[in-house]
Image (cartoon, rainbow, N blue to C red; front, side):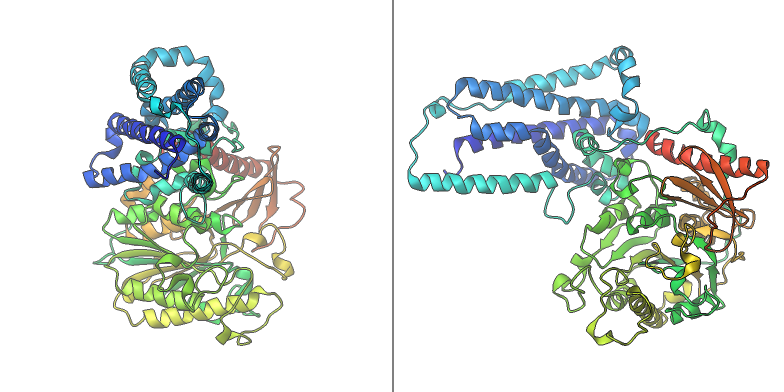
Length: 637
């Protein structure tokens, strides 16, 4: 046989572990049936199958010492194999313990174990006796599984006790076998061939997304959080209830239904499409976006002229735009251990109302975890470079990131034409990204500008023009709400934008060709995180506002003054129409007079103490609600 006795023995032991982890997943399912109530049995079974990928990765990480030693300790060594048996049981008893704990602990935090040892490790130690006394019955299945692992652990047969003499050919085969095993172990550790190593959030690509908790295992989520720098709990206010009055959460306004059928919703998230590059936001001076400017001044359009991004990176934009979650921690939500926290997105909310939902991005599948987060946000389908006709072999591939914007937007239009209505679709462009490459047919066609990004912004604008020209011919166009915004700003050479506020200035445009938009103040402060509430407001889905986070509000809500929240360096910022408030890491509050995309270098010298207290408390409340809500998985509680 090609496989050596040592490899066959190792594979048998891993097969046993995969079987036990399936039992652990079954236990998790049975103890948390209420979480998965109403989900079809076929979807549950698919989650069990999907979970094998996470099991393999977690087991390889946990058992790396065993894998290495299994290749070094001879199968014929009786004492060596007994020692490996003890290591096998000892290492995996830890994994069993983590998963059995989650049978009950999941009910309290709504996600799998992760970095709790950092955040509440002291509390766990102090209350260990009480916890064991209360949940003693979990020791029974844990003990049974550990005992079975010891009893069923495959051991070498007596025939393997005498090592055979290997010929030269057999040595060569063993060397080839070793190379193959190393490759398979590396592949298993990273969870597959995909662009990025397997993340916890990848479990939520299956719909409904709540099945992600079932697909995961607690060994995987804990190991993924081991090297993560823990977020420190915030205590500006003594309790969560105490911060609520200062939080400034706004309810959706009451509106009568205006359309006989629900509008489609299309969100166009434009790479690096900062306000600095438009003409309409700069008094008509310069600009590289003639089509966007014309759309922004159309009768059926609303351009929010005081809009700001909630982050500076593409990876921070999707959580804000699709779920209303700004980026105010060091690590992006998508790559953090909080991927498994409760989070509701527009895909999930609109899917409940019969919408077909999809996310489009012309880059390689796995880029920045967009496909993963699309699943978390409830998107039923994800279309990346793999799904584009021809993929990397297509003439539309830019050789760096993915598909050029113009052909990808035309592809998007064809996809929408084939999608059942009503639909909700989000597209993320990519051409206005370093190295700022243009298709050969468009070289020297656009204004060179003063920065490398300027011609690619003009190209994206042309791609938008041709998309809307084609979309106008489609029957779905007249009853669709379009939302155009940028993920973040980019290169800058305008002095008025070279400041902490200007670094976040992006456009936000609503366009509804079939019906008038609700009245709104275009100079109200707005942000990316306002998109979910604004969409539900326009669609008249006020009954779903409990699935909205309190950081944003509808831009059409006249009762809400509007605000923007972001983090820059070690400070948090809160933007209002009169002042910009800064909260430093030393809990000092400074306020600056507000001007569009400009903040002076020095704060107000003698501010109104009452105003400093009001805005300072509002910003503290937002930060505490965000941080502690993620730590405790209570953003919606």
